[in-house]
Amino acid sequence: MRTSIPFRPDKTTSLWSIMKNCIGKELSKIPMPVTFNEPISFTQRLSEDCEYAHLLDEAAATTDPYHRAALVSAFTISSFSSGAWRTGKPFNPLLGETFELDRRATHGYSCILEQVSHHPPICALHATSERGWTFWQDFSMNSKFRGKYLEVVPTGISHIIFHDNDDHFTWTKVSTTIHNIIVGKLWLENAGKMLVTNHTTGVVCELDYKPYSFFSSAEPRTVVGQVKDVSGKVHLTLNGTWDKQISQEAPGESLTPLTMCPEQASDLKADDANGISKRVLWKRTEHVANFEKMYGFTQMAIESNQIGVFEKGCAVTDARFRMDKNVMEQGDFDMANRVKHLLEEGQRFRRRQYEKTQTRWTPCWFELRDDPVVPGRKSHQYKGGYWEAKDSNNFGAHDIVDIYDISPVASKDPKAAEAADQAKTMNVTY
Image 1 (cartoon, rainbow, N blue to C red):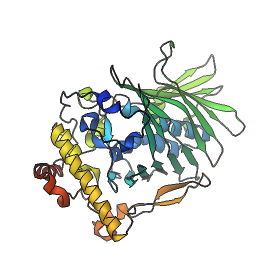
Image 2 (cartoon, rainbow, N blue to C red; image 1 turned 120 degrees about the vertical axis):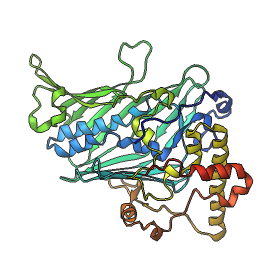
Image 3 (cartoon, rainbow, N blue to C red; image 1 turned 180 degrees about the vertical axis):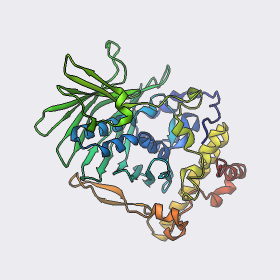
Image 4 (cartoon, helix red, strand yellow; image 1 turned 135 degrees about the vertical axis):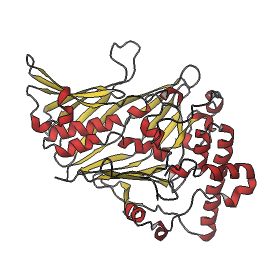
């Protein structure tokens, strides 16, 4: 797999010039030039939640309910780490856009995402592993500009079920704030309280993402947590930062070999005087060389536009084929804007066709069902079929719409249409 992408061109545009008329507005409906983007779609960005899926493998392997809750909580925290140095906005997915992570041969899991709604924007994710877990989420968010900062508030619920005993965990992500919109260097923070709940046993982990304070001596991006049983007794505590690492402490007792994974054994530290056992649950992967020149991308993000041997045969709706971000990745921001406009025009064309025929678009791989743990709430859940279609090379049986077909609107900008055609498969490497 590739380990780098073209460096970001030195192009600057005043974000304030775009945002000054957006105070208090929902930003998902505001058109933005690609100058403020990073060259991936949000379906790809959300898939990065699975970067540290090995934590779920470890959680599935333990029989300790409190250690399992701690590992799940570390997994939820790790999902924020890839964004610590990234202030670029992912491309808004087209309706019906998908993205797959086929890690069955290398990591034992598969993950499929689909943009299931345009207004409001909702992206559904489903991942399952032969190592004993299933993870899914129905993700949406509200984003508003508050004058000096941009606030992003997630509204979806994430679920994990472990196959051995049906432990069912849920959580909702904390808010993200991007600062210095008007002047200064952009920086972001995640802050607020998160409750990770095991609905099967009643065990919870209460996490607190600390906001930045100029007057505090605490390390920036700090997260603390407590794993409690149904009576409220604290069994484990968590502490660390959401961008570097998270440690677990067990007051009054030592961690037994049964609760430890071999690869983590070297991270166990004992404080005999205080009767406390401490171990590192999660560490962020080291940055790739020159990451700051490549949109702050992690290795996983760098690979996400590439179509290699494991992605061969993916659906035509896969975000890897999306042309505007592929053109942007090569550094041609002006042409990327033009291709983006054609893709959006193509989406409007399809919407008008649906209206003319009085038909309604429906997701291909997900369907709206009652949420299994939240009464009265519905969520988009995987209905199956994607991996069977890929493995049998039979996506044709699923009435898939080619969302990257811009032929009906190509005459509006022939040069952009030509660039789009070349960009569709520019990252194929098999």
